[in-house]
Image (cartoon, rainbow, N blue to C red; front, side, top):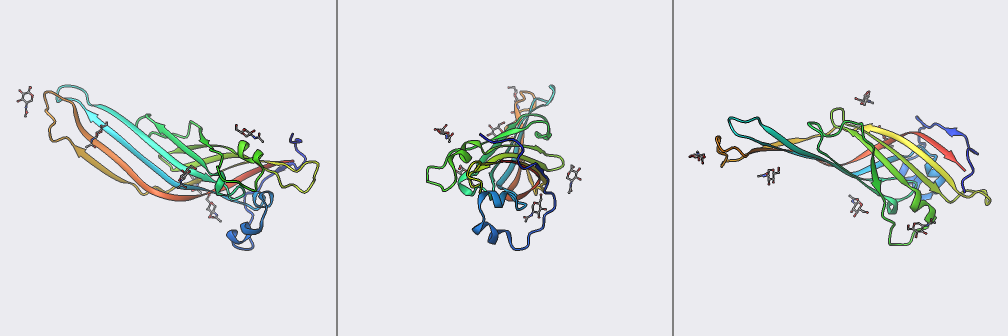
Length: 211
Ligand SMILES: *[C@@H]1O[C@H](CO)[C@@H](O)[C@H](O)[C@H]1NC(C)=O
Ligand SMILES: *[C@@H]1O[C@H](CO)[C@@H](O)[C@H](O)[C@H]1NC(C)=O
Ligand SMILES: *[C@@H]1O[C@H](CO)[C@@H](O)[C@H](O)[C@H]1NC(C)=O
Ligand SMILES: *[C@@H]1O[C@H](CO)[C@@H](O)[C@H](O)[C@H]1NC(C)=O
Ligand SMILES: *[C@@H]1O[C@H](CO)[C@@H](O)[C@H](O)[C@H]1NC(C)=O
Ligand SMILES: *[C@@H]1O[C@H](CO)[C@@H](O)[C@H](O)[C@H]1NC(C)=O
């Protein structure tokens, strides 16, 4: 069982790295990496949406749509085997994501063996929220490292949170239904928004560690 607050609250907003991060990660343990001002990566960050407009010349136009967001959350302290799949779908008009809902990232235990403690796999839970208008993405994750130097309390629990303002480069396409009949109504246009698939670095703004 984790012992509460042996290491008190740690805030790491602005640690600078002496050497390139990748170099450090090759030799650092889970706990060391966690404490070295890591960034998450939102891999293959993909926002897209589809809005359909229907109606006739005499009725009100109806708008139906879905916004989709997906990425894999990667934490350098845990390594790629512990990436979590973060997805969300929204039907809220008309920007879909408004920062008001925290969505859960799912973790599937790796089939391959790993040198990390199995405890890590079961407890590295993550949440995210997104605001389409500003592009603000925020992430929270709890994870455990089983590599502590004190044999009596080898496990350290980390609680991290942070975020980034994602700049989306979107293309908008409108398809109009050539068979639309004004008096009969029905589907007359679809608007799709695709923003490309990019890897986004997400800064860790606060980190709490408990041994
Ligand atoms: C995201 O994670 C899932 C599940 O582990 C995997 O199937 C998929 O290939 C990953 N995608 C990327 C871009 O890493
Ligand atoms: C238009 O959107 C509807 C869903 O609302 C979809 O079923 C249809 O395939 C779309 N058509 C085109 C040409 O994009
Ligand atoms: C992790 O979760 C799996 C599946 O729920 C379970 O079989 C396993 O015993 C758990 N391991 C630990 C260390 O809790
Ligand atoms: C990120 O976006 C938020 C919300 O629009 C804004 O308040 C904040 O100043 C932005 N931060 C940066 C670093 O641009
Ligand atoms: C639209 O539908 C009405 C009713 O079925 C039909 O009388 C009219 O010819 C149609 N118009 C076109 C342009 O197809
Ligand atoms: C970490 O992410 C922030 C955005 O939240 C970014 O400004 C910074 O450059 C990133 N740092 C690294 C080392 O990638």
